[in-house]
Image (cartoon, rainbow, N blue to C red; front, side, top):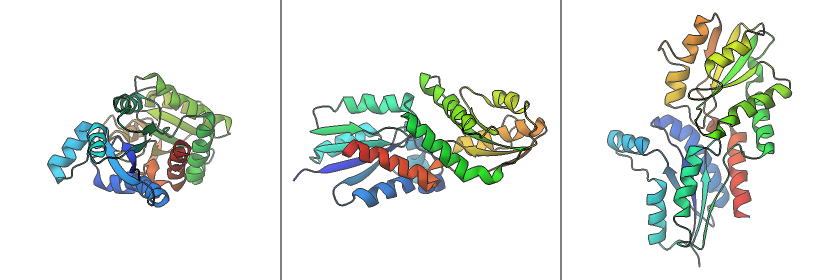
Amino acid sequence: MSKKAIIVSSFGTSYLESIKNNIESVEKLIDEKYACDYDLHRVFTSQIIINKIKNRDDIKIKNLGEKLDELKEANYTEVFIQPTLIMNGVEYDKISSIANEYTGKFSTIKIGKPLLDAHSDYEKVRDILIEETYKNIDDESAVIFMGHGTEHHANATYACLDYHLKIAGSENYFVGTVEGFPAIEDVVKSMKKRNIKNVKLFPFMLVAGDHANNDMAGDEDDSWKNILEKEGYHVSYELKGLGEYDSVRQLYLQHLEDLIL
C-alpha cells in the first residue's frame, strides 16, 4: 500500500497565536478532509522564521527540502504540496524549484495553486473581503487591505484585486502594499478624490504577524495607522489574518482538491 502525504507550506510567522489562528486552522480543515488517506505535514519557507522559533521557543519546523527528504526516507510515494501563499510570486517559485529537485524520487509530487491564481479566485476573494468588512463602510468610510508587496511581476496581483473591488461597486475599498505597488501614499492619493473621513485597516496576508502588528498598526511614525492619522483620517484596524476567515480556508482546500482529483 502506497504512503501518501500532504504538505501544507506556509511562509510562516514568529507570532505563535497567529500560527494557531491562521496556519493551523487551514491545516486542520485539510486534515479533516483527508486524514483517512493522507498524512499531513507542516513546513515553512522562511528559514529566518524557522530559526527564530527554534531558538526562542524550542519549536522545530522543517523547511520543504528537509520534509521531502524525511518523506523519501520513510518510503512515501505520493506527495501533494498545498501552499498557503497569496500569489504565484517569489515564495511560490521557491517551492516549485525545490519540488522539481525531487522529480523522480516520488511516484507523484504536485503543487497546488495559491489563493489568487485564476480569474474566478479574484472574484471569490473579492466577495469574501466585502462580506467580511461591509459593516465598516458608509460614504465617508474606507477599508484598506495591507498586502506584503514584491519586486516579482506577481505584484500586479494587488492592483488586479483592487480593480475587482472597484468594478463590484466597492469604490471605498483599497488594496495597498508594504513593499510594492500600490504603496500607502498611492492609496492616500486615491482616497483624497473621495469624501473619506474614517479608515479601517485589515491585513491582506494569511497571518496577522510582524507586518500587521508593526507596519500596519504599530506606533512608529511610518506605520500606516500613523501616516493616515497625520493625513487627518480617523483610523481603526483589525489584526485578523486571512486564515481566520472560513471562506478563505475553503478556497485553499478547493485548490488542494483540484490537485488531488
